[in-house]
Length: 98
Image 1 (cartoon, rainbow, N blue to C red):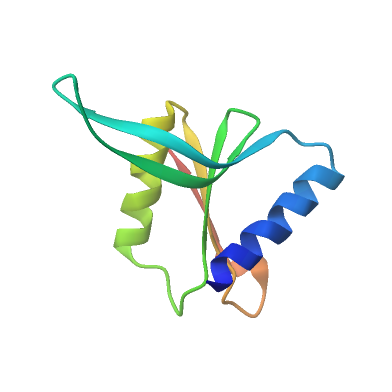
Image 2 (cartoon, helix red, strand yellow):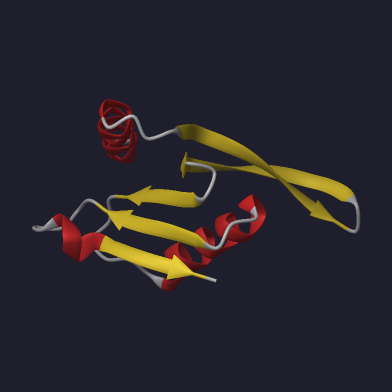
């Protein structure tokens, strides 16, 4: 639940800076041409960057894998995995590039 609050704050920051973004962008997951399901990414910035927002004690491999999956589904090369549950925000940002 707290992640939604951080996502809302991030949207405000992006809007105030006039940076284009989509919130909770839905991406289809396909297998052999069949639609399996949809995944939603927290923020899709300027059609180039996936941003996945977390508020956890520690980022784990599953969080990285989830973000990498979203990057691939979005067809972009980069993403940010942001954990807001840290004393200094820059310590909670993980940049992922494929």
